[in-house]
Image (cartoon, rainbow, N blue to C red; front, side, top):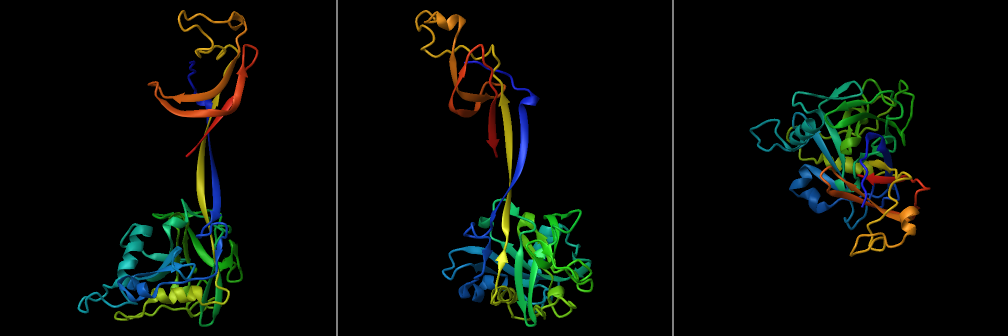
Length: 339
């Protein structure tokens, strides 16, 4: 067995982004049918969120929808004598901690501060790392029409970040193409953007102000029900807005970064020409069995082992076919490690 010490020039690291369909049938990036469970809607968890499935048998969970309100409006209070503490205030606090990392921070959608939001959280089983920016098309319907939403990742020069990672604005558009016309940015300055796209936590936050009647020229009149003691389930309103349109569509892709470590092993002409294989030497005397192997040996490289400094075998690379080696030949073997 022969060893060579690897140096820095023998290593190259490469990273490639791999995209795939997001939903249960990953070959199709779009779902057009949406179902939820009436048992869940009428149960305790229905006050917090609704799981959404792509078929009626509820075997393929795709995402969940919820509503958060800073002041606890939009759902019944936990205790009638403690104002502002409700299901929606709990949701708001959870997302504020997750996304903003500061209990005193506010959600600002396209320059407009909002005290509430709808959220769409993609099921963890649907992706490996995150969502692919520029792939979203989401149709939302309201009492005055339907609007198509996408993210503005293809229209911005620099990326914003917060505690949840990358932040893009949700705008009027499709598959990363912004429908300009409202100050060429896909939303109205008065109401702010339609929300945030957070690809690194696979979440969409929707701005009720922009989706409601206040969104001049771009609203669809979809408003949450507010009131500190309301028992209307706002998650169900968002579910209805996504699923009720005749052209109901939710398109998105997942994204995964595959890091590859390339290792180059270089057997020189003077190296790896002899073998410790029993067919090469005598088991009793240790002499080379054939005189032709002394001056003109020939070996066949089949395996490369990667060891650490303490001589522990870490990885084994198998060649697709044996590589002939003698004093007249040099080789360059490239090993690829994906992780």
